[in-house]
Length: 360
Image (cartoon, rainbow, N blue to C red; front, side):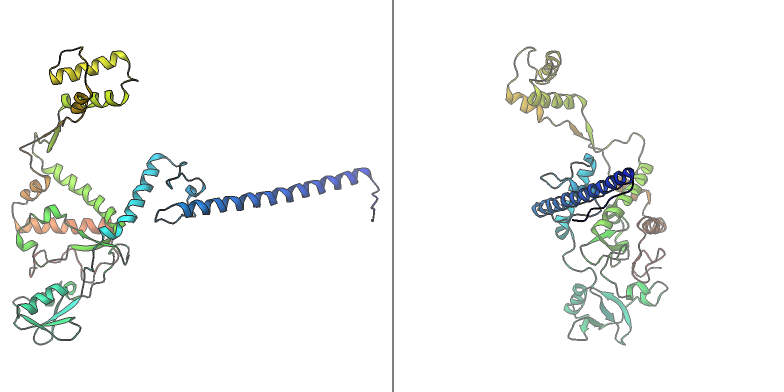
């Protein structure tokens, strides 16, 4: 064994301290790596046990501590609720999405072969069954009309949209699956329009993915609320109103059923008196469980028989005037562009496109 002698005892002590620190640091790093490996192994096991459809997000701190139901206990309750909602949305995507593509892009041409529009397979089959058209190929992706059409919207200024080949993708983000229809003009308004504003005109029905549909619908509801508040008459009342006395009866009954043994005597007597008064029972008599259950099931919502839905009020304000309805539709188109920020609209889609089939 080789021994090294140092000229100075102080130098020898300094080197010994440096060696001790180095060894301690190496030991700490080894222990840290071991614990990190154990933590990763436990996290992987927890992920395997989680029966949810969502894979763990590596950027989310929720992976460090999970409860038995897969929700992070370290996050605030409202975040936990949103995570659960997201999980439920994921599991229901296939049920909520359209079962078949919205656009089939079947070409409809006139007798000379000029493209008039692209239509659905169902519409093409209807033309053929009525002997109004015939398929021109075995793939049944083009029909030729057997009559001269009255209107040729394809030749007009905004005819590009009806002849364009439309892609089945979310018009906002480009997502290629789990699509839902979105009405740019909210359906409750659209359904009250005169027939000519609804028939054979799908310009204001677009494809959105589930998440973009949620976002755009939220923006849409904001404007719906503003419009309806603007046209509500003085003294307007909602469809259902709360009867405060009945609500108090129900609230007291629920409290007595669930927390009777925890409620202070003085407060419990007041609650019982409220229920006695409702049923016309003498004060001081005992309340049976059946009586409490009956009081807890009291309906405190009173229907307003004179209620008029907000959509009816808004459409009535348009007075059936074609110009006002047209302006109303274009305002919704503009609002969709501003709030939804769509990047994948079909070629020819425009705010100024006709609001009536064959119109201008």
